[in-house]
Image 1 (cartoon, rainbow, N blue to C red):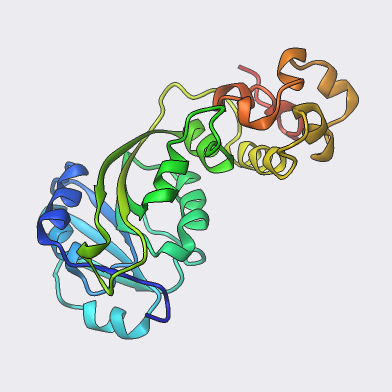
Image 2 (cartoon, rainbow, N blue to C red; image 1 turned 120 degrees about the vertical axis):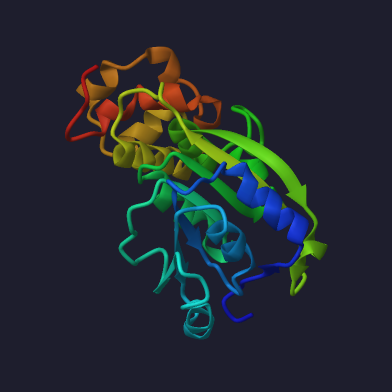
Length: 247
């Protein structure tokens, strides 16, 4: 497993994961890292079309042509142009969890059902002020509502990984604040790069000017990043944005 992929073999778990996305023939599904195609088969039987992005040429070749409604895209999911889809269902390769999640969050979708390492899933769903709350939870919480649906034992995979996994469902928020998504991601990264400093210092490190900082809620500026909700953080984006949104 030179690419770090662990194949989900538990048929019952595969079926549940596919069902969590409430798929129908009207749905175009994105699957990242289909591997041996076990989950792909379940998706193909439920959805109208599946786009399966696979970096391993041998696995991509084996999957091509197996299902009439599955289009295999060979390449790196972090780099290839992504097709038009409305739902995402994937057992994500562990080593790209963070980067692919940020990429997927920046694109529109209706529902995402994603398998992560359990610890990663718990960090994504962490509460504000907790030890686990960080950039991941802030960004994911800005874009989506996050639900951990179930834990999956490491014994459900081959080869067996060192840790258990968890299935997470992401539902985009219709009520999220008006703030540019790319600017918000840059803000969250900058704040947590200066995690031990107060928000005011983190904003200054991101290039926010004194005048812009002076216009912000003074109470928020005195907090530390882990004490900011995603929506409170969103209220600070204008200080670092070249194109602030006025709501």
